[in-house]
Each structure stands twice: as C-alpha cells, then as structure tokens.
Length: 529
Ligand code: ADQ
Image (cartoon, rainbow, N blue to C red; front, side, top):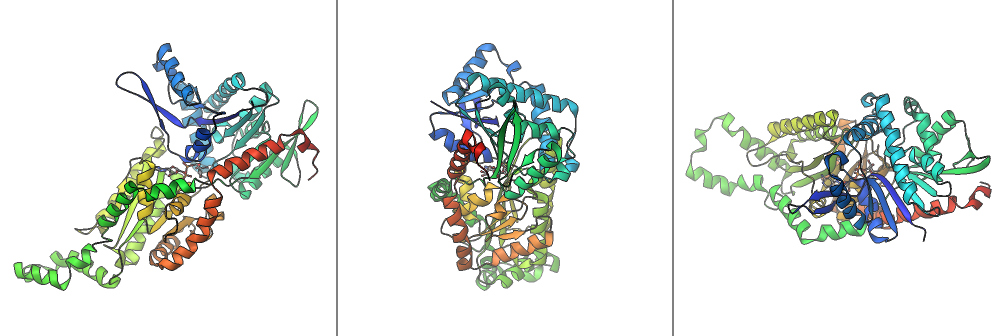
C-alpha cells in the first residue's frame, strides 16, 4: 500500500530517559508539530522522518537501538546527527543563514562555507534514510527550509516518488534571495519536487521571480515550472496553501476546567473581578483608613502612588480592568521589544490604563545555543524590568512575564483571559497564535491586534492590522482594541472564526496532499494552462 512519509528537521516528539533506564516520548511544541501532528497520529499508514535530538556519539550501540525502537513504536524514523553536524546544518546554515535572510533580517545572516557543507551532508543523510525505506509509489512530503536540497536528492535516488515540499516561513523578495551565495543550488534542489507550497500568493510570486532570474526556466500562467529530466519534460507546480489550525481542539481546551481556572486566576490577579485600585480608594475604605491613622502625616511624595492610582481609577470610572495576552517563541522575528515599547507608550499616553490593564507575556526561549537569541532574551528581560519598574503600583504590576513553555490547556487559559491579543511579529510565514486566540474565544468577544507582516494578516482582515515597526500605530491600535465594545468585537470575531472553523490544519494537509496527487499524475503534464 502506498504510504505518506512526512519529513521535517525535527521529529514531532522528544525523548526523555526515565530513572529506571527506559525511555518516554513527549510531544514537541511549535507550529509544525501542532499543524501536522494530528494528521500523523490519525493516519496509521503515515511515517515521520526527522532528527531525533540525540547525538549518537554520546550513546552506546544498545542505547541507540533502544531509542530507535521507542521512536519507531510511534511511527517516527529517527535520524541521528552528531554535534558537529547539528552545529553546521541546524544552528549554522538553517538558523544563522536561511532563517534571518528569509525573514528579511539580512544583516543578521551569516555566510560560511563550512555550515553550507554540513547542510549538504545532512540533506544527503536524510535522502539516504528515506530512499532506503520508501517504495516507488509512496508520497514524500518534505517540510521547510532545513531540507531544500532534499527533493532533488530523493528524485535522483527514486525517480517515481511523488514529492511535495512546503515552506512554513516567508520566501523573500528576489533582491534579498540573490544575496545568498548558494541560492541557485537551493532552487535546483527544490526542482526535484512535484509540488512546492507556500503560505501566501506573495511568497509564491517572490519564489517564481527568483526561479525565473536565477534558473532561467519556463514558467506558465498556472505557476508551473518546466524542467527537463532525462530528455523528458516534467512540471514543478507552485501554489499557496495557507495553513490552518485545529479549531475544535483549541475551543475544547479553552472550555476545559483547567483553562477556565487559569482564566479566573488571571482575571482575579489583574483586578478584573475585584477592581482592586478603585475599591481600595473608595470613600468608605478611605474613611476607614483615616480613622486608623492621619493622612495628614504623609508628604506629597508619600501620596504620589495613591494619587496616580486614584486619578487612573477616576478616569476609568466603573469600567472593567483589562487583560492583554501574547504567546511566542522568543525569536527576533516575533517583534517582542517593539511590542513592549508600544505597550509602554500606551501607558504613558493613556495613563488611565495604569493599574487597569495587565499584560500576560508568555515568551519561551528557543535556540538557546545561538548567541543572538541569548542577547534577545537579555534585552526582553531588561525591557520588561524597566516597564514594570517604571509603572508598577504597590498593588499592580503591568507585565506578567512567563518564560516557561506551557501545555495547551494553560495556553488556552491565557487566550481565554485575554481581552486583547497582541500578535505583532516583524515577519512571519503564517502565525498560528493569532488563529489559536480566536478559536479559544469561540463565540466570545476579544480583540486581535495583528501585524501586517505575517501570512495570517491576509486572512484575518477583521483584526486591528498594524505595521509592527510603527510604535505609535501599535499603541493606538492597542488602545482602540482595549476600548472596543463587546458587540463590535463579537461581530468582527464571528467573521474570522467562521473562516478558521472551516480552514483547519487538517483541511490544509488534505488540500496539499490532494494537489500533490493531482500534479504528480503523468496526465498533469499534458494539461495546457
Ligand atoms: P513558529 O515560528 O513556531 O512556526 P507559530 O505559527 O506562531 O510560529 O506557532 C507557534 C506554536 O507554538 C503555536 O501553536 C503556539 O501555541 C505554540 N507556542 C509558542 N510559544 C509557546 C509557549 N511559550 N508555550 C506553549 N506553546 C507555545 C512556523 C512559522 C510560522 C507558521 C508555522 C506553521 O514560523 O510562521 O505559522 O510554522 O506553518
């Protein structure tokens, strides 16, 4: 029977050792495993090939066999890479060269022939492993920028395979792509596929423009690239497949007892239910305080904190306190410092929010071995400290900063508590967080402030769309989002939620795979477009 083989840099599961020497696998977080994990789980004929996260030089042969068995039980085929390969291929070429360049951070990109060699070597290793296990009628679906050489390497080993490749991050404009010393080889690597998928039409257009100028191949109106193989013509089809998410999963998890307990905890902490500042300064409590001690004993300075809180409370009147949320991997493309500056500007421009809005910032460190990521973490730590130091009242802290990775239910609890989600990446292929927020607030109000630099912006057009570099614009959008009426927020969300409910991750996989079946059919070549 023909099978589907998913291939990605990392397997969707990580291995942990138990004290008794046995192993257990846990699900990884991240856009890719969230999007395709459910498909792999529910299709028994589906295998997943990827890096195991284990350095084979640190284990005995018996241990490697036991680890392989554990992965295989979950239909995962592990690739073992030593630290030199990982440093060159993953930390080096993939994350220090391709990731920044593809996200328009060309100044962050490093070009190094040694990391390129490692990238070639690891792509070959993936090709050997897959060629050894694939049957000619199998379908191979390669994921992302780590494995751009793989389609051609596989085609050379097994010409009959149906091969698809999907890019989860943006594809840059040709001017930026041309800066890449090995750009031509990468494009040639992709020409081994039958179908190349991107999140948006814009990324497809960028890609085709680079193919046209660097490979000099014919492209027809339907986005098909014509390649010659052993004297025969073959087509490589390029198309947009905006990724969705499992709407029902987030809606269900947001309604779970655990998520609701988190939501209520957050609401209580942020004073939503008790309106801590205004009640503590009510005439009644003030009279009680004055009875106990004389306020006249205090200087103006002593009272400045109280006055600040009082004036903010007076401006806001009886309106509810609000909660802002965001959930990110700590990555420079996610725009955390820019977002924090916009939040700080809002507190200074609209002081009525002081004491009345709390920002829950969940930002989990990633790629901690990479120097620029360590620096980013320090920068974000420092900004959060500065903002909290400058604006905190004795009974209120503006930012709750959490750097742990949380399981899905608490994440849904955070989404569920957020009156506003602040999702402002500087550049992002899609951004699933924006979609998860809306699914977690199914049928409810809540406002989404969304960057115009991510794929999601072309679908979620009823959000507050902002330029993430424009601090003033983000500050104003944030203020408006906090002020939106519940009815208007519900109206906007209903439009976006209806779309997300239908365009799920599972529909995305199905549509990509059925397009792949269609374009790898030999009759496809005869179709005139
Ligand atoms: P990512 O860069 O990982 O994905 P994103 O789409 O936002 O970005 O997905 C992140 C996922 O990880 C979400 O499911 C989110 O809930 C989860 N997550 C993030 N931080 C977390 C935390 N602190 N704790 C728990 N969970 C957390 C890449 C591309 C994106 C593209 C996806 C899918 O960069 O542009 O949308 O692939 O194609």
